[in-house]
Length: 224
Length: 198
Image 1 (cartoon, rainbow over the protein chains, first blue to last red):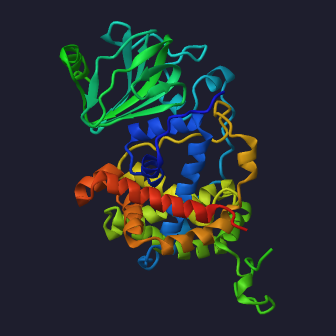
Image 2 (image 1 turned 90 degrees about the horizontal axis):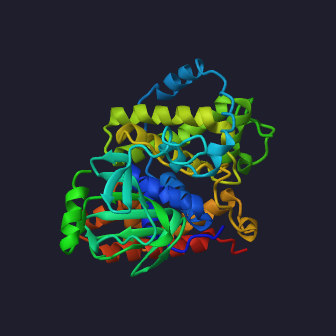
Image 3 (image 1 turned 180 degrees about the horizontal axis):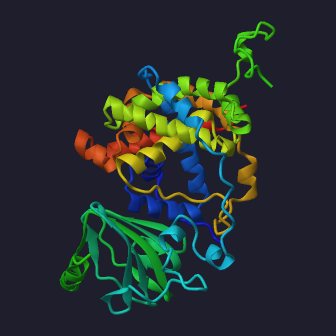
């Protein structure tokens, strides 16, 4: 399988490695990492930096008795449980972790995403909510071949990871594993590849459409 | 392997540089459930974890409770620790980070599963170039000390303030481009220190 050519970049990976990204953005970055050995390696380096920074922190003494209290708790510890058995292979193969955990209950017997729960966004384009919180939403977006999204910009930040198929916009072609990062400075008009496209999209803040078609689109997006 | 079952300062043990490293201690906890080794690890990490959690906004009591939870996970998971992949400090950092996201933000931490057959594998030559984590961690700490202060300060904010770099930029009035370039420059220097320079 080809390795991705569009990456989150060092600063977003540091946010992920340090633990500052919200869950939805972390899910997008980690899903990209499942496709991208180079970014996995970068995060390993950044975690090593986290370890070195932790070691360099000025120690703050704990109250007396903390260690003893913890040692007493260890007496009640049972031996570590056995590692969980391998999951059935159909479920194992199609989508990597951590995404697979967020699809639990939505996959059919062949490991495909079921038809239930999808919402209409525009002709040829549907979405399925996976996660929504105060900071934003994470959803799957499925587009038929050759569908164009109205030209839009982003109020906050939007991370889109291609899972199947692909799309293109003014910035290039995005294929499985590639991550597209939208922010307020970016205006684009993505069009799906002929075979269609399945993406994971996390939006933090808002997504604003520009142009007349876009304003209609905004009315749908606002419902999320 | 080292005098953990008896007194730490055994007369028959030669010089002080024979003291077990943090990595050795963690392996001893994993293999033998060695409480004395765990006590030494606690002495090193617990006060640093307390500072970490205080910087993230915990009061003293909450920080100490959470330190205990993190150290309990260290005890439980020590068996899975592999010194080839991470220094003890790095391993403890990732456990503390995930636990504080769970407890303080009530969120999950999405992570890849390294054993997942659906992972796109890395090219073989890249795996051959990996160097042992323990060896590189000393060089990394030295390189951190040599960073220009404005780069080091931003790096600490990125790891210890629970704010993505875009928010750090807005709250501290540092232009986003400056934040990004300082973090990138810091990464460049630190990466060089991680490479085996021989």
